[in-house]
Image (cartoon, rainbow, N blue to C red; front, top):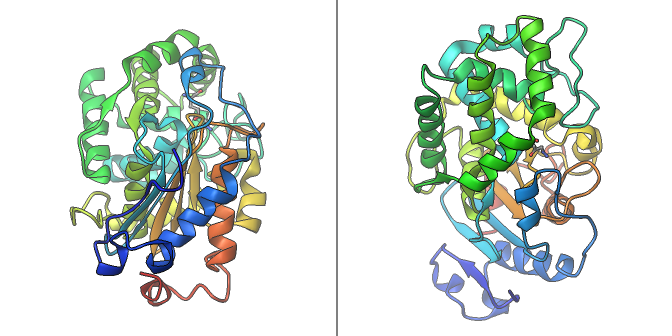
Length: 339
Ligand code: DON
C-alpha cells in the first residue's frame, strides 16, 4: 500500500483527488502521518493467540470521521482484523443501557489498574478494577449475556453493526483460537465466580466474551464507532441513534483513564483523549463532540498497544491541538475550519 491510496468521502470539490495541495487539511494530516510512520517497524504482532500471528505486520491504515459524517482514510483502512479489546468500550455502554449504572457499579470498578490487560487481580473489595481490562470485560459479558449464547452474541453484533453502519461477523478461526488458549481468562472468571461477581454460567459468559473479541472490523468501522461516541451516541454517517447519550460520558471517562491499561497515565498526559486499544492492532480515540480516529497497525508494544496507533494519535493531539485540556481545543467550531 502506498501513499497514493488516500481517500476522502467528504466529496467536497476540493476533496476529489485534485492533488495533495488541494486536499482538505484533515486528509493531508492523515497522508503526512502515513508517510511519517509507515517506516517504523518497531513492536511485534501478538502471538499469544495463535490465530493472531497471521496478521501482516506491515499493514497500516488510518481513518478519521467527523461528527458531521466526513470520512477520511489512508493506507490499509479496509483490511479486516478482529476488534479484540476495543470491544470493551462498547460492551460497557451496552451493560449500562441494559442493567443500569447501579448493577454495573456493584460488579465492576472504574479505577485504573496500573497493570496488564490480563492481570489476575481484583480490587480490595473483590471487583475487577475497570471494564477495560479482561476481568472487567468478563464481568460485563456476564451481565449482558442472554439465555442462549447465540442470542447474546447476536445482540452484541447487532449493536456493533449499528455503530459501524454495516453488516459485521465473527471470525470463527480467531474465536476457536481464543477459546482453546483462553485459560488465563478462565482463571479470572473462576476467581470472580468465587467472589460472586459473575454467576455460575462461566462457559456461557466466556463464550460471550471471546465472541466479542473475535468480531471482524476494519479501521474505517472503528473510526465510525469512535465518531459515534464523539457524537453522543448517534452514528454520524448513518444518522442512526446507537448508544444512549446519557451513558456516553461514563464510557468516555473510563476510556480516558483506563483505555490503554498500564500505559493509561502516559497516554492521558501525552495524548489526552478517551481511547481503546486491542491486541488485533486496532486503536481508536475520541475527540469529544468533534471526531473519531482509528488506526490499524498490528505491531504492538510490550503493553499490547499498537505502536503506530499511539504515534498517530499523539500526532493528532500535538499537531491539531486536540488534547482534551489543550487551550486550542475549543470544540467543534475548530473542526469546521479543517473540513
Ligand atoms: O482476552 C484476550 O486475551 C483477548 N481476546 C483480548 C485482549 C486484548 O485485546 C487486550 N488488549 N490490548
